[in-house]
Length: 242
Image 1 (tube, rainbow, N blue to C red):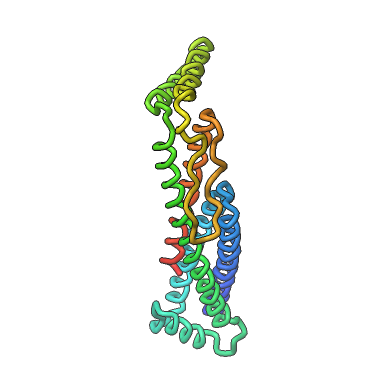
Image 2: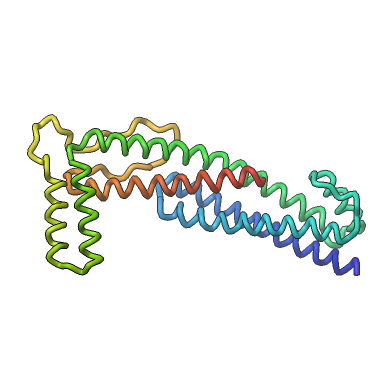
């Protein structure tokens, strides 16, 4: 019976080790995506990391339960205590329980180091995106209330499948975007560039050359903010569990 429990423990450790390997790989990919400003990739990676973190938590709990089934009262929560337990359970080393567990801890340390850097990069990029949004609002003369009203009207018209109302709403939208296109020459034609970054992250989309690009530009900033917040959330969770 004990042999079966030991085999089950070995299987859990192997799964935990491989999950840590996958998490390490995703965190490396995340570093590259941050450097390239690849927002869509960051969102996908954050979702995958959350799934792996859930799996790691489940495996760790199952490992502790398996140790309890082996009726070894000396198994504690600390790494040193667990290593001593595994050495006693696998005296001849055939199952390589200690090597597997120590490999898991090494990978977790590497993931933690990457997560610290990624969190700093994401925080910097998020701050810059917020500054760009504030700069956009202050530098454009577009009437945001009129713009938002036109957007809502277009949505309602599309829901109602009213083609005439859709055309009218689109006209209002264009008027809101062009409302001040003929203002004085001191109005900036481009969004002011962000200040120099502490990290090599290309977080800003191309600034709009004409007012009609404002909505797309704001949408890009929103997607950036969402992606960088997802990175921060997953990184913080990784650091807490490492």
